[in-house]
Image 1 (cartoon, helix red, strand yellow):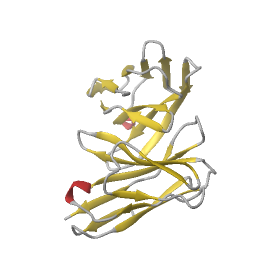
Image 2 (image 1 turned 30 degrees about the horizontal axis):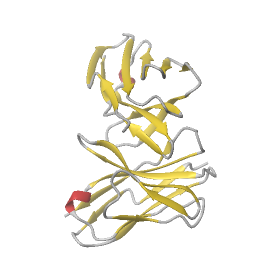
Image 3 (image 1 turned 180 degrees about the horizontal axis):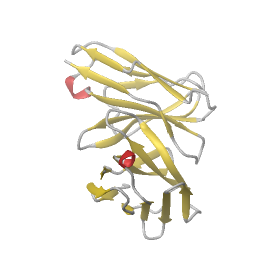
Image 4 (image 1 turned 180 degrees about the vertical axis):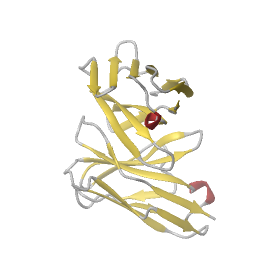
Length: 110
Length: 111
């Protein structure tokens, strides 16, 4: 059974810091990996999608990497801003299922 | 382009009542699914569909039914609501092997 783990569970940083969120998964037979952002009481917003054949994806200040063989992904956020405060979810997609980590709750202090 | 639309946004039910949560997508995605999100449990798959007329169970299917008569719609039915079904429900859709698009969720309380 696929297990997805995110570390740390919570992170508080001052504005302007660069930071890394970690995601690990137990079964490397994935189609893709997706990072989402969730604001309190809101839905999931897709940030980055990495196909299993890819190593990384970038969007603005966000960069996500994927090492399928070791079962790891990282989300790098550059020059963090208070507006980045949210919960970040990592999810891996297999056939007919997507498994989620429990998320990292990020607080960026002004 | 509306994406994935869920209705209602909020609902309060009494124990034993039934209701249907609606989900519609306009992206011609083959795959649709329902998740529930609970504190400390994360998101868990309830039911999914790989195309019209085809549905299957996910990790936590008990107490829920689904049908997929069209590509666009994937309603979730609660047969006899229980307090344990108090949760936030999300519908998602995707192309085969593609990224998931989520609806904004339905917050359900069963009293």
